[in-house]
Length: 159
Image (cartoon, rainbow, N blue to C red; front, side):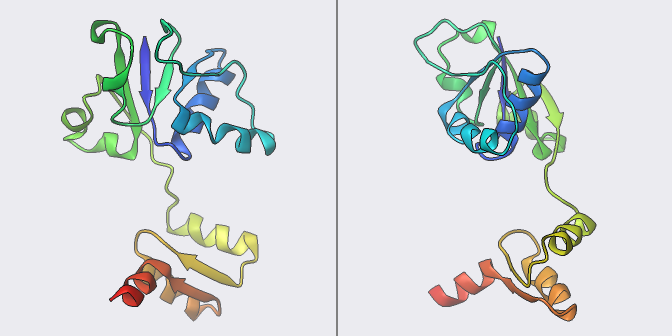
């Protein structure tokens, strides 16, 4: 049984969408499955997926979050694990994840993509919560937007 490891928000649903639209119905862990209805409400299809049930003898591809492959009902000898992540490009990924196959895939936007998203949304205020938050906020402020490095702001308030 192939097992795909993907984060619960975004990556996991992308894996399920890719598998199911390729004609491979799959079983999906609840941490990933719980968000699929939101994607479906926006018109993204996931034909043939079902929520994973541990007691069921599973033969379909399974999509779970990293770290959950050890809790699978299938015997380890029957399982091949693929890590789908930008972290798969890191040398230590195989040892850290226990994956048999590494599929480097990052869903993070680059600088130009982030600027395009801000421009396309027409946002006048941008709260940046990850990565190089303060330099990006400063860059956007120089272009007339109300931009805040929300992570830094939250830390300052707690101190």
